[in-house]
Length: 103
Figure 1 (cartoon, rainbow, N blue to C red):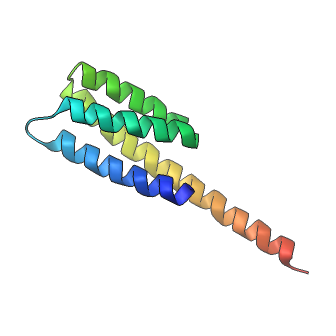
Figure 2 (figure 1 turned 90 degrees about the vertical axis):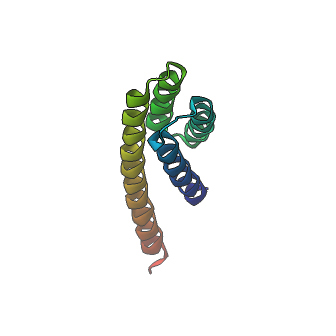
C-alpha cells in the first residue's frame, strides 16, 4: 500500500508540475487532479500533503497561477520529506523484525 501511494503520488506531482508549467493552464484539470491527490493523501494519513492540496485547490479556484506553482513546489518538498521519513521507518522496522528472528 505504501509503495502504491508513493508511485501514484509521484505520478500526480509530475503531471501537476507539467500542467502548471504550460502557457495556458487548465485550472479545471489541475483542480480535479489535486482533488484526487488530496483524497489519497488524507486516506494514507499524509495530512501535510492533504492540507497543501486544499490550499492548491483554493488557488486554482482563484486562478492564481504563481500561487499554484509555489504550492506545487511545496507539495514536491513535502512529498520528498515524507518519502524519506517513511523509508527510514521501513528500514528500522525491517531491522527490528530481523532482530526478533535472531536467536
